[in-house]
Image (cartoon, rainbow, N blue to C red):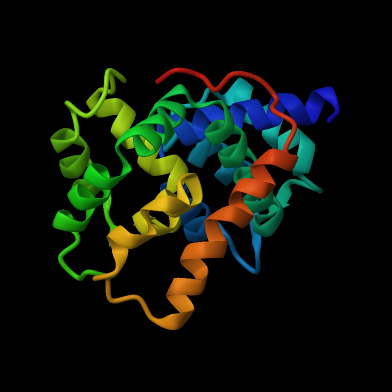
Length: 213
């Protein structure tokens, strides 16, 4: 990875940790027309939504702008790269994974107790509530901001597929999800989708420690 791209991805890592990928994407979609967003509008999004200075936003814009505009799909690809990098380097996610490995059954039951639809999905309030209940599971000290960081980095489209993620970290927990209303398609995805994301993160060369929130 060249230096300019490394700097741009680092900026987007901070954006992801300050906000969330979904919120950033929503704002980009709001401004985008015909899959393009003006450089000034992207600068506005990164500043107002993610708290990034104009100077740092320019590092992203200079890399991907063409004649004053940016393809939204190209920005989305770079944002996804930043999410994978942030997840790979996040101490909060690493601690969360350790809790799954040491107390997967109890954590699975806590997540299931917050899953009103029994479909293996949780939103941020449900995830946070379960994690607060899991506070005594290990000596891994996680705080409320850590829960938000973890959710933003392991969720997709604002939803945490907890069965998928837990199975990816520790397949031995499969028995704890027998009561979920997962379709055959969802079941296959629970065994493969997060593994694919994990493989992507393994292929990614980390560009530096994720910034603390």
